[in-house]
Image (cartoon, rainbow, N blue to C red; front, side):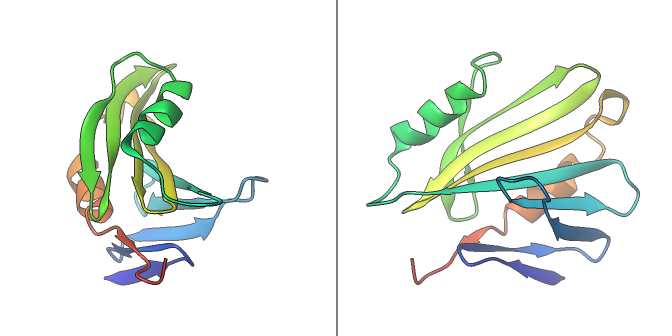
Length: 135
């Protein structure tokens, strides 16, 4: 396993998954598997003066769309909401989770014909999410 670490969070990656910084202006991290089936994208928000409340994750998630409904979830040390959908030929899983001053918006997407193929691996990877203890 490889440790992927940022200033705010870390997670473990199996050797067949590779991470790189997103080139977009909002930054983030993109994680892809070697077989090219799908990718995980992580974007972070930092609370300027405190901590994110449970309602903050729901409010942020609702900005991404309300159908299908968001369900309570946890990923490693983070708590929030998640959902799965198919849109424009893509199978998409989304999470909006927070801990303290950190909120992560995470997506996994793949072609809808590959839906479910990487679910166990994605769940294992995201289950290792840990928040930097110095926050």
